[in-house]
Image 1 (tube, one colour):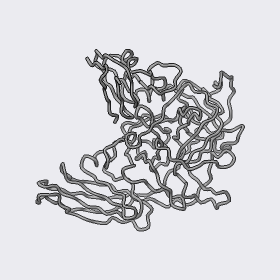
Image 2: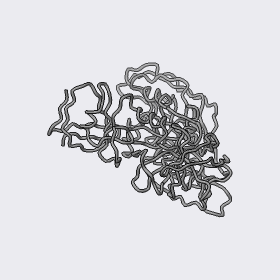
Image 3: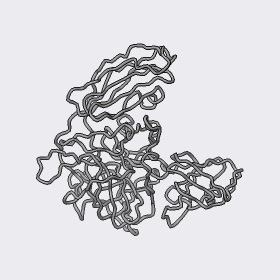
Image 4: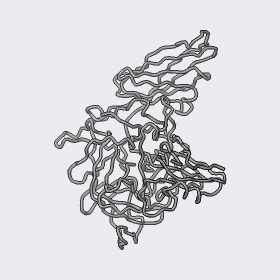
Length: 464
């Protein structure tokens, strides 16, 4: 039994689309003829190719009393805008390690046997065409080595075939929302929510092969729009086994996933970024915002080449049009907000209160965004399958507590959390989980059954 009275319990958180017929219920529209909408995705794959590259460190023993730099080499892909290394074999013992440093900007990563196992035997992305590699052998460790047989080499981007999804003129502006990141190399947007999960569009899954890294604090692209990566500490490998997703039309196109801790910091994205979005199924917004990493070829009158803002974080707001219900797990939202390829997966945000109401998934190929008839689209959190995937992200039998969520109704779900820990304790079944959003809770609580308390997005203080 745990009792929290005056003392504090502190938890450290870690398409051409033809419209069907509708009848109206509040701001929701129920389609009488489902299945008439084609998915028109808005990812913007970042071009690259793989090259054979043979590098063998040789085998080394730790014969000194301190770490020994036993191998040093420069890996080059002449003229490339960025690169990534892939290890075909290695033995780093328990304490030996590899360091990789970009010669362009000094981005630096330290890889151990443990971290390489989590990064699928790959490095993060490095800007420029060359990196310095060093192998350090720990005292007493024997047979230490690594082999590289392949590298990923970024290609230059250049022109675009057009930016579908702009509602009139492009009103997007640069933004620095710490909750929203870029998925490399498929070219999508992903973001952090209040139970520590990450969300994006289902077609950004890439079949579990391309959905490799989620990057935050992304720097400007090169002048032709070729993306550049942030420092290694802002790049996180996506746990492929964690992905739960659906790709079945604009109203059922979503993915929920986890990231591994950063190899340099050991922190999860929410711990490093210190920010997250709340979600709602109940909001009826007038205006919404979408923030993401879409392509950009402005200023107007340019030759069509992409620019340094392309696939960096930008945001725009506009009118919310409607919600269209095609089935319990096929619910679409529509809005007049500027988005382009690369915005797939962006949060759709209620401008009035900051809640997110869904995930941006696409637009129409022929008409794009053409108010008042043709809008950009996303999947609503009223999609039951998406709700279940988010609700059960930490496990089964989860009750949520968030004292600052503006929900008018409370039922302990991720979209309608309780505002006191005491309510969570009362509602959670034995063996269940109470997930508590960061903050200070004044509850005096008694727990007399086996439950797990988690603080997924920051420090929680109970009993003060």
